Figure 1 (tube, rainbow over the protein chains, first blue to last red):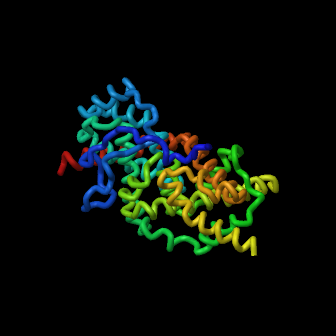
Figure 2: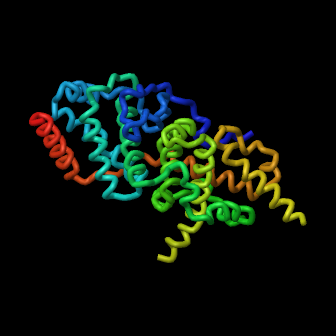
Figure 3: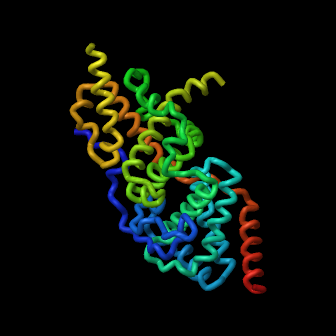
Amino acid sequence: MPHSRFPEQLPDPASQLPESDIPSAVEGTPNPVPNSPSVAFARSAEPDPIESDALSRAQAGDNHAFSQLYSLHKRRIYSLCLRMLGNVAEAEDLTQEAFLQLYRKIGTFRGDSAFSTWLHRLAINVVLMHLRKKGLAVISLDEAMEPAVEERAGRSFGAADLTLTGAIDRMALEHAIDKLPAGYRLIFVLHDIEGYEHNEIASMLDCSIGNSKSQLHKARLKLRDALRVYPRQEAQQ
Amino acid sequence: MTTDSNNSSCAKFQAQLPELIGSGEIASAHSHIQSCELCRALLADLETIAQAARQLFPVEEPPDDLWEHIESAIKNERGSGETG
């Protein structure tokens, strides 16, 4: 019997992230981030001695060491911001904000989780805070999206011309993700790219687990639609 | 009539899909999948998308001057902390 290849079946990494270490996604409210993250981001579990050394020195106030930490993590944090926001200028601003937050809070990192995991969660919270300030209600995104979503999903009943299996072009996928509506992109990035579980996403976004599952499913359906169109668009260019 | 019936069972199955997939159940083992080529293809596509997404590691490089902005903001913050 074939096994599903959905990432939901991956085991949870055992990393722990103390709640007190990370900024709340909403200022003045309890930190909504769960303390058992399963972060695909931190796939390389071995501590990096260069990072450990830079971290210790940065915590002691060494600014050069802090710049080393920036160099080590800038790509991941910037890419995360870019994927969550889909906008270069905002991604730059929030990468800056994430590292500023890091500067302010680096002394509170206690090493209960991998530093990269902790920093990653910090950056996600910075992005979520930004989105909330912008008025994006991440909970009621269903209503914010075009009403045709459900109909588009239903179209698959008669869609015999698909079959993406084994043939997804990386660029096409990146492009399709960029084009997703903000709420779908957020949940897709958090779950399918960054490796968070639905219960973690629900806690981060303050929505139900069912809502997270439903929105992820719709995001994948939209990507499927987009990826089926993409090769034809490319061929016409 | 048969088509309507098929569509109805497809609709029913697809309505269950978010929960089936999200709860980690083996959706491909569902009885409907065994008999429905369209839903089998749909499931395969969704699995392929999820798999492909997991391969998307960060590759984007921030602009070179971003560190200068961060450094400047840190200096400002430190300065205002000292004077305040």
